[in-house]
Amino acid sequence: MNSTKRMNDTFFWIILLVFLIVSACKDDDTSQGVDSLQGVWQVNEAISIYDNSGDNRVDEAGNLGQFIFDNDTLRFEYTRNDTLYQGIERWQLQRTRENQGFSKVNVFTLMIENHDTFICEFGDQTRNSQMNATNITLRREQEENSQDARVELLLSKQ
Image 1 (cartoon, one colour):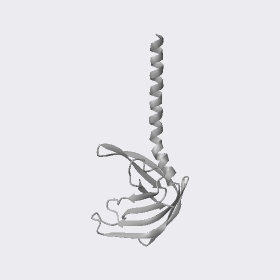
Image 2: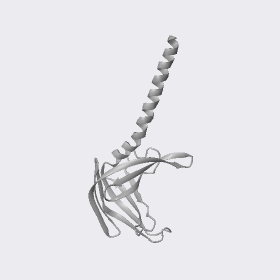
Image 3: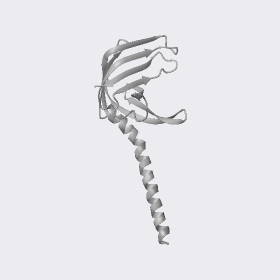
Image 4: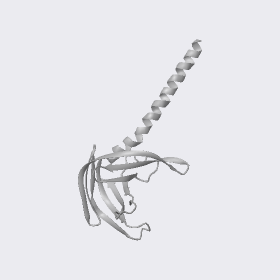
């Protein structure tokens, strides 16, 4: 009887430990991404694509502006296609898991209140690339029947 109780106690602690590890890992990727975004980012390239073929596009490079992430506030000022975008807004990073081949990968979405929503790609998009990232790509897809362009902003951390 005593050994059965000991086995049940051991089983309980193992299950509890596994649960804690799994639940801790779920938020870990998002918090690592949020931590990486904190700071000053230089906009180095802006690509605006106006059709599905990619033939009608504008590529720009140089010092196009900055994104400054501070806690939950983002200050941004950048130029794309001769238009200045600027503001101070709240921001949030969300992570989802999507199928890619035989595995699931992290997909991060950067939501900038009153401005835009971008897919945020950290570095080379490999596992844990959101940790201490120094390069990101912000991608906004073109909505159907919209005159807005598909946009890619390439940023590096200063």
